[in-house]
Length: 242
Image (cartoon, rainbow, N blue to C red; front, side, top):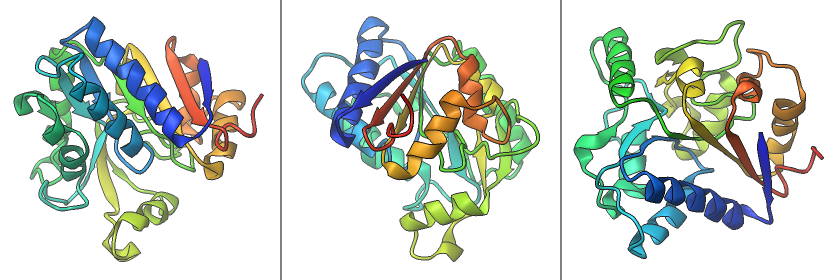
């Protein structure tokens, strides 16, 4: 695992954006795995800025998002579809036919999950996967559990996750209690992984992820077994490890 400790959030975001831009420049038809939430917002801003410099294009890129809230229509302001449109897709030249986000309103969720996995497989797998990490160690919405869920699935969100995500909603009661998420196996099959973490509240879980045992009780710990992970943190998130 390569570890980069950035001076601050902006430098963390810029470093990660530079790495993904390099991936697109080297392989214009890259398949990218994308994340949402508070941490990647600066990353998307920096990536859009690099794109606007005219050095690369998203025309051949395909994207797969990690997750989507169950029950939220893509027009909902808190849906991850809306998030991605506002923070990235409407600012770049990507073909929206190449954008893939789980459908949180699908009538047959099991079929939606199977179809999502099939799309990733037919695309040739993910070349570079962006991840954040929850305070409880989740990646995607793979919550701490007695087992690792292998592929895309419907997951019940932990109270810790619901509380953390409530900052994006008017009240905690509005936060969905479940979501569709890529599974651990899907994530681990990505050729490269970028994990971003910022803020002192992430310091402890980052230290456990790097130095602790590999366990489903801290899903991100499985990344110790991946051959090409780059962890980019700001100084606060990297405070507890050497």
